[in-house]
Length: 158
Ligand SMILES: Cc1cc2nc3c(=O)[nH]c(=O)nc-3n(C[C@H](O)[C@H](O)[C@H](O)COP(=O)(O)O)c2cc1C
Image 1 (cartoon, rainbow, N blue to C red):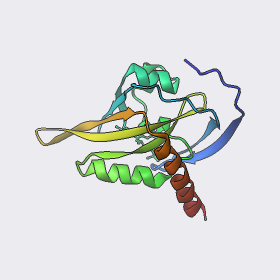
Image 2 (cartoon, rainbow, N blue to C red; image 1 turned 180 degrees about the vertical axis):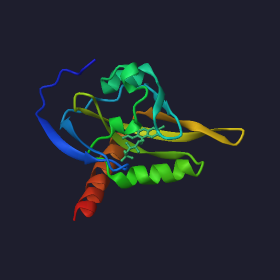
Image 3 (cartoon, protein in one colour; image 1 turned 135 degrees about the vertical axis):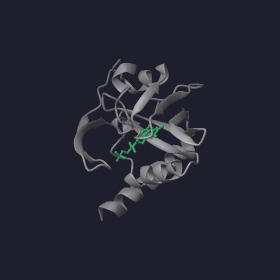
Image 4 (tube, helix red, strand yellow; image 1 turned 45 degrees about the vertical axis):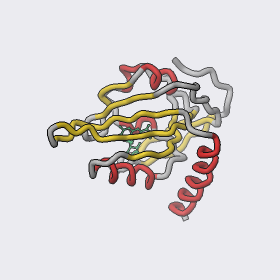
């Protein structure tokens, strides 16, 4: 399920919230979000993936079974500032719905932008996990976020 790519690959070092680090490969190749598509995943309360739809497997280049059981940060792109996720976890951890724009990395290093809504699944007062539903973002919002996230990264690095 890999995307045929001729874009030059770049290896980047990525550190995660839990203190772990790994090197990820990225390319400048964008996978366009298909019109009318909805990408869905569910996690347990710790952010470990428990369900993905076929659309997520298709766009990310992973098989559904490769994603299930993995932490959701598997999809994280190094261009995403850590503060965006810190804010996401703060919002959903307090039982509210979070909406934002994410640049995600595909298995082969290419990327795709999504407009994501992440919501807690609470039943009888108990947190069962979280669901994320992603739709096609407008190009204006993607351009705004590219600028905003670059500025946030520059502020963190300086
Ligand atoms: C339901 C749900 C969906 C998520 N979707 C994504 C996603 O599409 N891309 C992503 O990078 N992180 C996503 N996250 C956030 C990751 O769990 C993680 O916080 C993020 O990738 C940053 O990694 P880190 O917290 O280990 O630094 C999601 C979290 C939840 C609970």
